Length: 148
Image (cartoon, one colour):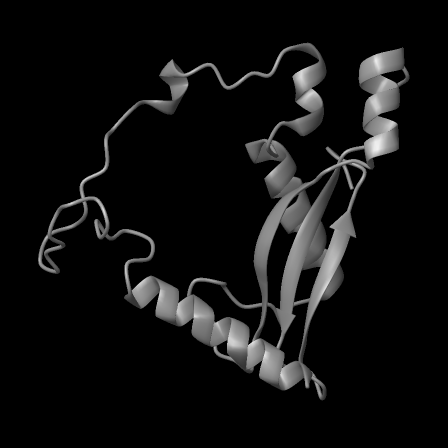
């Protein structure tokens, strides 16, 4: 069953990239030319203030440092069998995604409404384990951040 789920997720990913997925201009009234790279507005990231003051920090995306710490932690714990997620095979082990795990609602409200300490920040990592006797897709919570 897990193999079918893995293959389904893999096919959705591949189909999505091939039909108007990342990098295409489909759906915005422009023709996509395979010989030309897609045009993206260029803005210097250093020119944009990406800080989140005060309480909104609770829901801020992972910082570059936090993402690097999570990837290093997972690479260390899961071993050398991980491959780059940009070109995986269905039989490979790879980290598919890492994002902020939103805190439990009660803990977030206690912090926002009553001034309790902020809940520990955690990351949600989705890992494809295709190189195991029973392939599976696993969600792992990594934390506390910034140093898991």
